[in-house]
Image (cartoon, rainbow, N blue to C red; front, side, top):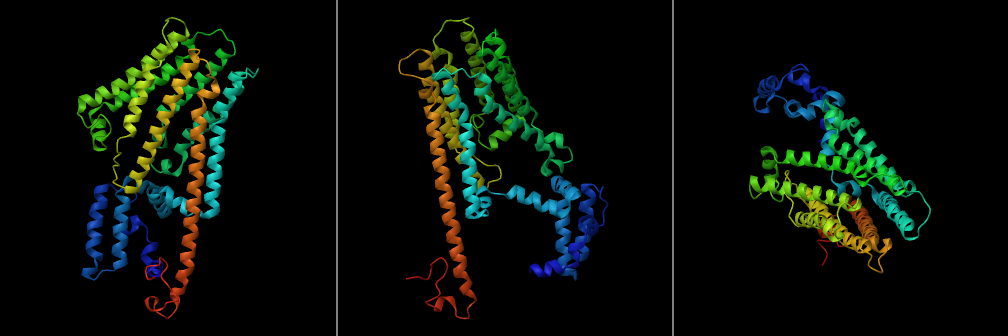
Length: 407
């Protein structure tokens, strides 16, 4: 069948040409041309089956704006790339890497994780051991990560997926980029403050106020009726209880965040004299809401079971991260309140524990994938015996690859 399709002359005819329309044709013109060509080449009326199939492909591609943009820019290879991009599954991608690729994937992720843990390690050495490092050196791993994130956000519109949409700048996450830049400025101000610069904490936390302002604007956008309808389809927390509850749910998040930043700034500037437990109380409530969201069963718009499984895995990781942050905040408050026996190493211990568990999970997953790859190769070797003239179900020396016929 594949050879027949390759030999078909209709595969060499472009989509616009086979429909008989211009490249500037409107969707209505494409529909009209498709009906006309489909009537002419329908197999029931003596037409060519391959031509009829090609006409259907042309209509399907050209009627979808995204697929049409890919076809106009990259041809049919671009359409195939788009389809593969949308249908790509992490487990399928890993299975195609082979045993060596899976091991490389595991090592790469382990190295990235160790690099992410470099900042808390330097922080512990700086605070607990009172070294004379400047704070910019301690924050250097974060600065490198910030640069990588900014580069990825800026390069995203230049990817083929974004370029083929006609307006690559529309795919740029302006809000994400602005928030990352706010975080970078905050880190710079924080390093200057910790190194002894005479700055008030209000100025240091100004970038975080801007960061939260962007988050508030996103929350306002989510409160629009159209966004609530979309959230209701996906059964997001708060959206299924009505429009009013959805608005209150988003407002509650923003109130808690703003309260946390204001209390933190006033406590550091010694404008209020309250316990650190009261200062971080909004953070505890935010984490409780995050854990609540993690326990909700995610609903995927596409209905893809694999995608739903990935969403469930991500939700579990979010819940685990929320619990770890919850514990770390408790330990940090104990350290700030002067409880004996608490050091920076104790505060960040849960982070090292979860990092070790993640590395173990990567190793176990890699071993399982390698074993699966080995089993598939062995099954493939057994399948080679199927070329024998002896039927498989009557040959005791030629069992089925899955062992169904074994006693």
